[in-house]
Length: 227
Image 1 (cartoon, rainbow, N blue to C red):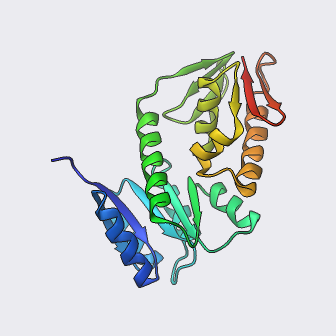
Image 2 (image 1 turned 60 degrees about the vertical axis):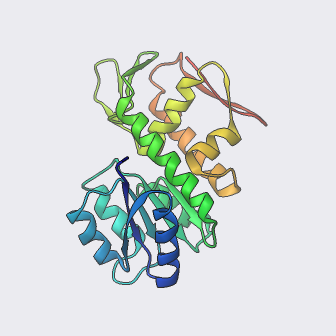
Image 3 (image 1 turned 30 degrees about the horizontal axis):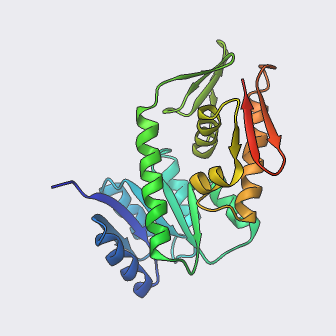
């Protein structure tokens, strides 16, 4: 029998939490349901979940605070935020503190399950990918590190590393904007597109020491990594 993947779910609405738990369990996940951020952090410390689904607005400790504390100990575990918030700054804050994806309430269970599976697959890919050469840079995807020649290593965020990896896989070809948004952000709405533009700008800066490398914006289509 295939071993079940353990997911930690922090949701303070009992009815919604139970619906999510039962739905995920029908897909062969083992779900640890916690009613607030403090219980969730204690449960995280005592178990070994493979993915976290965190409600943003929770009593005692909100989802963003919980994610910050967990990221101090583990920068690899995938985190999905559940939120009723839709302001751009809230979405960006979630990504900035280490979130990998977010879902705005109300959402469909099928969408949540697809995003969970995508994140778990990407995490597995990250563990198996070898070191990549991009121009004069060495890109260690697994450790999320970028290094120019023999200079100091640059730490990338989880999303920066995955974005660069997908650009590299499609190097010298146009990477469709909607495809990369769907793969890494879960959808191609306005908030996700704005967030991706910010990450592209950050990657350009971090790759700027090698003038032969460019990330081109192909208007109306997407981006192209030239190297």
